[in-house]
Length: 435
Image (cartoon, one colour):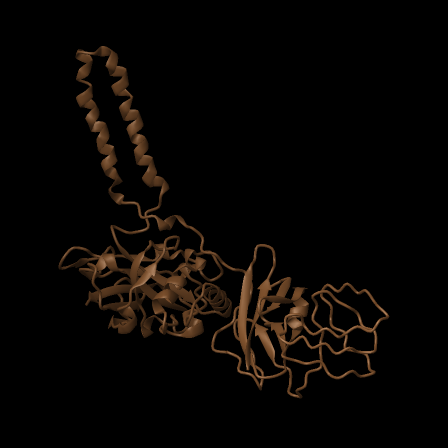
């Protein structure tokens, strides 16, 4: 029993995607490696076995039809019939009248060569199709988001979603990744020092022009805050992430999560409520998806604007919409029909910075409703998933929300809303009580 690694690379300009799958075989087995039918990858593609190139510069059509990879196969005994001619990738096509051996793939572990008595075309680094010693159907390895059937006589891992090697989306560095304190108004206090300097002209008139220039330089300091958007609302906010549930959006985020190295979570619509061995890591990858900055398909609104200020003062008060608000809870967040695609459903999660709730957090009840602010038409004091709410998620810099440690709230009342599209009125989410 031998384990082989099959690697496919997408060599399209600007793309360097690689997909690797390991196969364990106990004897001669042929595999068809093909591109998933729903993939939009253009190629060209290279195919490697154990890091040795097997096929190079394969076109999209060739990969959709599939290329054959033989593992642990021995060529049959010589026969007077012509040998099977491979589909060449970059053949040299130099005919010869001398008897040449049929080449097995240069990257297979066994290089048994059995000469034939009929002429064949010699090729450089190009695998030939050899007749296998098994009569079982040729299994295939499909390159796509969801693996296809594996060979009947070999154990092929299918529990890891494979990736369609297309369009690696890199998180864009939006200006929201820097937290600029709103206390920059203290810079404007510097001009008030000038009058103390204007007393000196009575003794040293020549110094007066030097001091009067100081105020003209000081106001330039107040220009800096205007060029850097402030990512938080006085001083901490919770953020609402709306994940669109249409197939195109789910495919986009699924591909991104797979390419980013996700282990068990590839978006709510693809995987359900997150969990598993690397919840914190998967959620951090989820936060880096560039779609959260908006203007990408049905990812319409930058989530930094879907924010609710967290109350720091002790006791109870009201938020900016006049709704009751307790200490360390977030104020009302509205989602108007124009901020999402009203014709489809979204699944929402609430991201709460741990520093904004006093540094400790077990859970927080949530109010959800439609229509006016303070509405609880969906649920009043809903309880999010307690297990996930207790796990720290480290959001890196360069995301749509400020970097830091967050707790993420998931609950049934935030899944697939509205229950009956279209969304015709504002959707509201508000924190109620922190525990």
